[in-house]
Length: 213
Image (cartoon, rainbow, N blue to C red; front, side, top):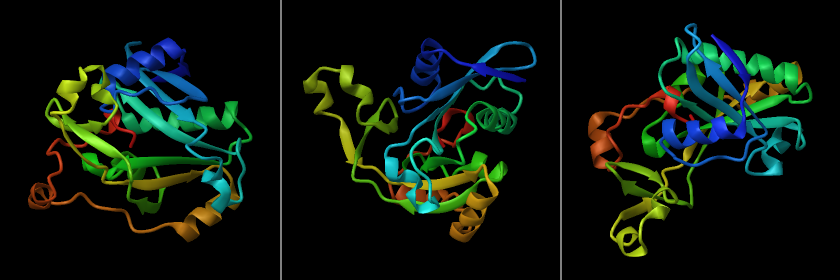
């Protein structure tokens, strides 16, 4: 398996075709993922984060942290966790000023961050969201996904408040690692089938290679 710097064209295709959100995130750096057969498997992308304050609780400023914004993969990769590990090594090499990686798992998709738990990230927080999502083509997706539909059809769709996210952190320096350990919490677990029915969550299984996790 190997990773190489990805073009915007490749990132756009991967995000629109391999990721449930169908949204192209702002990207600082992205990587193409190739399996051992040299088949393209999609992209892993990192961005500057939704806010410059994202790293403030770790004593970091903009440019010293990145958010893992997409793992938009098609399932042909031998190992999703290996792809992530290689991506992290490349970040260390190509972005030496970065001291922390942050990512989120979408509770509304019943994602708990399985890939992060398997690759030694720290679970540091969880949050609710004031945004909305829409039930479209059998699953809950970002409310911007059906924007291409006529307004009359969009008005007939079912909307709800987003369920929030689990926040994970991966330190790239010993100083930040200490802070991550201090903030770390017990890993969240998948809720039961009955709980998912009770809360009207989708019943789709979490697929780490197609999540933001």
